[in-house]
Image (cartoon, rainbow, N blue to C red; front, side, top):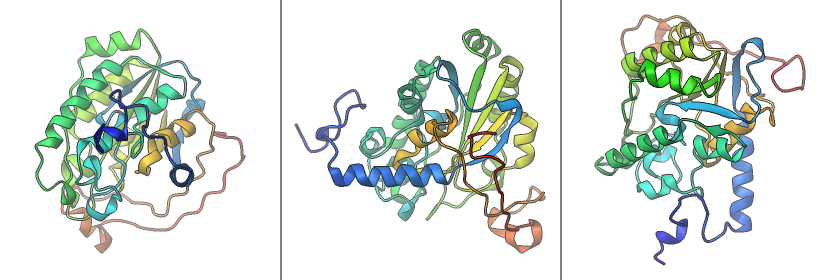
Length: 287
């Protein structure tokens, strides 16, 4: 078995060789940091926590979850987070995606086949990307049909849509189709809102996104998971199920801004930035 093949078995789920004690301890620290940093922005009518069962996951970030920033923002310099090869991003040794994490937590993901196809397309595009260390590959979101959405909704009343964004060293953000949601994302969210009783937004982002666009989607719950590192998928799954209290705090609030210019200019008068402090009413998750 070659050094590359030794990372994981061919099914991309079993770690081989097994993690060392040092790696296990490091992973535990990484997961705790990820969970501690997640912020529950909305939880209308106790949409969260979720009970294991059938759910639908949507969005590229569900199957290719963003681990960290570009360039030096990713200690592995791998794939989704800048550089390396696709194999790193598929290995639970280095990166736990949301899809397998939710399945491990006991959920039946009705959109699994669709997501796996998206993952294959993502990997194909990533392999063709030059300068992976200092750039961020983005696969455009697929537009959903009403027929497909209603077929999925026949099996569950809960949909989770992952909004994913990446940036960092060598890869600045933009306003259109980055800070603002893309037109496809808006249309997909509107369709899901009309088909599912419960709509949950998961923000797999390293910076702000347009709050007005999130409000327009009218989700029942919004969880800011950020970019949770190598254990991000499992950390998010534990928060979504209530195994962990989402006790993270926002460090800044972005006010209404004109949709012009660059996000780099927001601190020069076009956005309101201030520190906030939030004290939860109860130690019980999602109350």
